[in-house]
Amino acid sequence: MKRHIARTGSVLGAKCVSTEVLHVVAGARMDRPRFNRDQEGLMPARKAVALISGGLDSMLAARLMQDQGVHVEGLNFFTGFCVEGHTHAIRKDKRARPLRNNALWSAEQLGIRLHIIDVVDEYKDIVINPRHGYGAHLNPCLDCKGFMVRKAREWMETHGFDFIITGEVLGQRPKSQRRDTFPIVARESGAFDLLLRPLSAKLLPPTRPEREGWVDRERLLALNGRGRKPQIGLAGTFGFNDYAQPAGGCCFLTDENYARRLSDLWQSRGDKRYDLDDIMLLKVGRHLRVSPAFKLIIGREEGENRFLRGYRQRFTHLAATDYEGPLVLVVGEAGEDGLMLAARITARFGQGREAGTVCVLAQVPDGTEREFHVTPLPSSELPPEWYL
Ligand code: SF4
Image 1 (tube, rainbow, N blue to C red):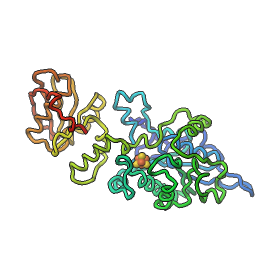
Image 2: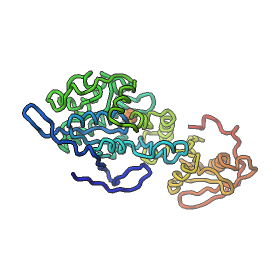
Image 3: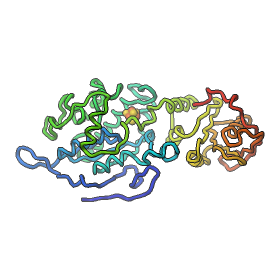
Image 4: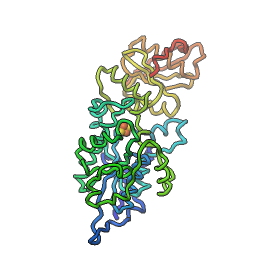
């Protein structure tokens, strides 16, 4: 069997090449039989493409298919909003969590190939103009599912696969995993009855893979609701001892604070647009909307300071020269008074906060430097409404 991997180190713990589509992994189960037994004898195994989020449910769905002799390969879509391994790497309080890409980890556990596809640009339209609206925050779950299944359907057709599986469970998510929304995803993605949800299949109309006997419906499940016990039990049966939280757990769009920052970004620009740097920066540091014209991003610890330092060529940045403290990015046009205020805030969040005067160096992207000798801003002069 062909095993292809170029290994590189990365902060996400990934071990693969960095191209638009990444192929990963090997493992014992790749050597499972490539044949299903039918009434006439042996027939080539059917091929399913699995949406692998990195959560337990998609792992279980894929494993149920493998157990029926189906050849499974995984797809994972990189939207820019699911980068928890990166967050764990730069925050001290998250270091205990695994520094890994959970989709790659899941694929490795399953012993399947994983294709990671960069959809950052295409996905913007889903986030900016969701046809079915947002969930509790800025999560466009129903449109997102339709988009991902559509991409999977296109991939399936291009690569000669037979059907698509997801780890969705009926009733698990209020907006996107309901009896009335499942058909919407199947229809709008163009997958129709080639979309199989193995974890809840017995509660749903039979799909083509079931009707045609590509999979045995009797060996599929009837999970329903938000409880996790059956999945955790099944994980034990399959020997999955280490797995990530449910899929929504990694998506920043479901996070209230993150959604507030994204709304602020759109409001400050006067339209809904973003690039990958914007959405990465939204999850790092304290964000203070000091005026409509600019905001400050303030590193909270060394890992965040290091990350923010990577943006010195794009934004004016400040740091105290005589005390330990944060690196602060100025996003927008601060002007003379705004820069002075930014210097006082920089001093306030550093070790010199009690000092009479702190020297703060400001550098603009062209390399020009200015020194400010400022009194740290007292916390009483930091309005709570500045915090995003
Ligand atoms: S939680 Fe995020 S990734 Fe998951 S369906 Fe919703 S928008 Fe998509």
